[in-house]
Length: 131
Image (cartoon, rainbow, N blue to C red; front, top):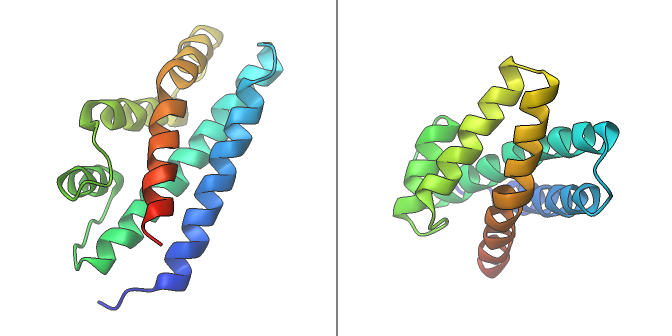
């Protein structure tokens, strides 16, 4: 499979912008509306992150078909270094897809603020270094 560098560059750029927008939401004082916005931005950022990683893995002739395969291979290839943290992101993303209540929203918001932003920032730096 041929590496589609323009597509990777576009997806990487979209991910970097989404991560910045998530940071903007998290910089605001917490309220139900900000919590909801941050959760939605987390969902978008996570989706763009794993898809950018998937495209980079294709460059290495690695066919990762879903988020879990992509995270496993990204860890092996050194794109990410915290497999447990990314597994937590994946589980949290799945939780936001299937369940919603106020208590869950509070837990997810705290997780995003405490864990997701650091993982996303590390990936931004790594992907930027790939050219």
